[in-house]
Length: 244
Image (cartoon, rainbow, N blue to C red; front, side):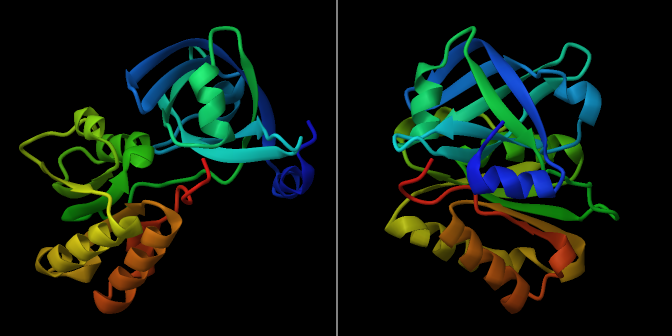
């Protein structure tokens, strides 16, 4: 597979290439689409871990390849299947997902994924994300059953409120925040709430997966202002406005 300079870099870091086949699709909302796929032998080779993700390659109008990462949903190594979920915006990834149907194929690279459940387990999870991060958030919560969590999920559409991150009402406290000021409202609300929830910086785990600028701002805040150790913070920008 030839994927330009990005593909060369991934090869240097021992990325492994696969081809996935779409077996079905469903529109969860008008802005959120779930695809079901076969894995081209990937899961038998790699195994599965929480929040596992892959890079998909999409064709752009200029002929270049464009890659984006997506978290696996319900991976089944024995069957060689999984699903992917797309928060639909504008761009080649969303364009492909809108049209994808059974029999369609897409190239993918497995490289860069990796997550280990924190040891010792935190007294509380603090999770900040949005609809694009929903599969990873769901996988994260499932990987730490019994751990209380406070979550902030940014919404862009009214239908986002119907998306289910698999919460346990006895353990999980969810705050939905409408997107305003390019993520500024989310940053403001999280910064106002976190100090009261962080009694011991070593005894929490913070997961931040929003747009790149919001993620960067919140990651800097929790590390510098709240003194949460770097190893107790996962921060990864999932998208940039205008690109998907």
